[in-house]
Length: 161
Image (cartoon, rainbow, N blue to C red; front, side, top):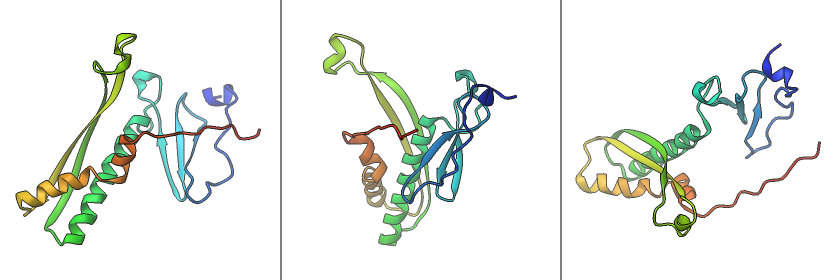
């Protein structure tokens, strides 16, 4: 019997996600393996082996980077298409790390850390310097970028058993 069943974890729920809802649930293999349900789309998430996972999918932070990268690329494509600019290809490379926040108010009492995301955008096509600069500005307006930079609220509750 595998580890998940031995620990009494349920297999993924029977009810499909409602429109506009994403559901993430443990699966019956691995310690941290998850399945992500988004309507007809399914993907996995997990932790790397060095963190005790099986590496069956991207880690949660990698999924966050993927969301930012996809949103950035789509936003740039939409803008260039609307302007009829000769953008042939967009690629976005992202990295995430934790950095010490030396200028934060809490730095006096405990070492504070902030999330640091590096995003590098590659644009291919016969674009002018002005067009390239404008696309860089537009990248900062992608909805996921704006969400990450705003103060956010996550409200959590338990579903009835």
